[in-house]
Amino acid sequence: MLLSARPLHNWRCCIRSGPGASQVWPAVWRRSCTAAAPEGQPAAPAGVAGAVEPQWNDIVEYLLPRPLAGARLGVGRIDRVEDGRVTLAPLEEDEEEVWVESHDVSAVEVPEGSVVRILSYDFSQRQDKEGNPHGEHAHDVYTLLDHPSADVYRGPRTLTVVVRRAAA
Image (cartoon, rainbow, N blue to C red; front, top):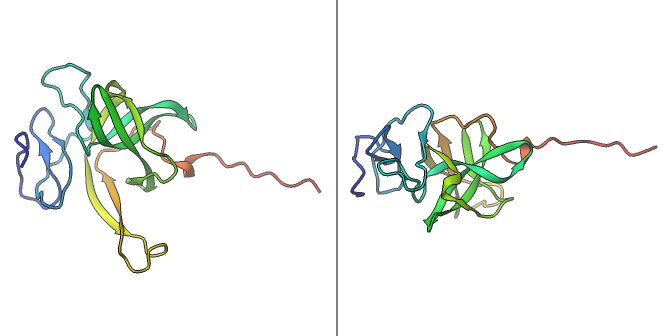
């Protein structure tokens, strides 16, 4: 068990102790969770002592390297935090408040200061019955307990589609 985690009796995930209590990561062998502040946990500016810093498997809002469809923020799962840089797996909204890893965008590396806030979530897995009829593989699914900001990129389905008719 993590030294900075304290268990509560629930079968979902794990939290960090500290201001606002923020989720660290879900795992099969962890069996504890708590409700975090309703609007997520602000990420720590680099070098600030005592503030919550992003860690592996946190779900975070981050500043996109360049805006997408008018959105300046993205949602991603942290793969690595190293030397002031954060490597993220971008997430897309599958259905309301349910996010999955993007298959259209590869990993994104941003400065640690680009992480805006850490979001609380429930982790689960889903089988893809269409492309995986025997159920050998599952997709990771993240149900956000904190609402993402209004200007978050939610995936390619949020892009404006323009239909042009062929000239007759």
